[in-house]
Amino acid sequence: MKTDLEIYYDRRAAEYEAIYHKPERQADLLEATTLLQSIFKNRQVLEIACGTGYWTQRIAEVAHSVHAIDVNKSVIEIARNKHYSRQNLLFEVGDLYEIPPLQCAEALFGGFIWSHISKQNLANFIGQCNRLVKAGGNIVFMDNRYVPGSGTPISRRDEHGNTYQTRHLQNGEAYSILKNFPEKTELEETLRPNANQLSITETEFFWICQYEPKQE
Image 1: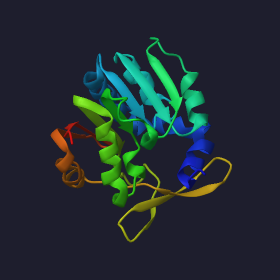
Image 2 (image 1 turned 180 degrees about the vertical axis):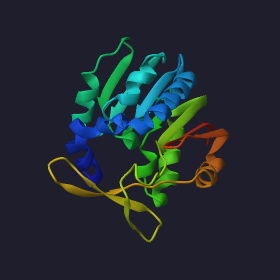
Image 3 (image 1 turned 90 degrees about the vertical axis):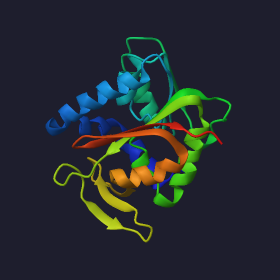
Image 4 (image 1 turned 60 degrees about the vertical axis):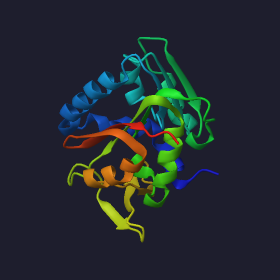
């Protein structure tokens, strides 16, 4: 059974990339693209929650290969049907938590998934991601910073400190969506026990962290 979050992104698939057209975010998107391409050049990359393939396109330009997964078939179909200059991609409808640990990649990218993981489930999420990367590999997460006036306002906070937004589709449907906005210090405290060589880059609208996972 799909969660409300999965249903929301399934129904938002055709509208999703409008967020990348906001004029005030263009400089940050270019900076993020440059950084991600420098990290993933010639690497075998597993991309989780790939969505409609916006970042898949950019990573695939320089990576050795990209295995991109998402739980929603609707976004995978959009991603599959984009133009790619190289034949180095595999798209798959799949769940992060069902990937066998033996299928390890040299690098893992999770774009805009961290914010949808509840604070009480972050340790399990990080542990699973770490298990999917080979020794000496690296993990990169990218997500939004909260910028009043540019993003959807926070509508509520739960007893664990998770924040939520009320999101509306073009047809008027409304969904309460878990969306956390960790500060740099919180990211460092959360990742430090599981990460070597942790580095966090912040722009006005985004944060990008990269690290080498500690092996269990």
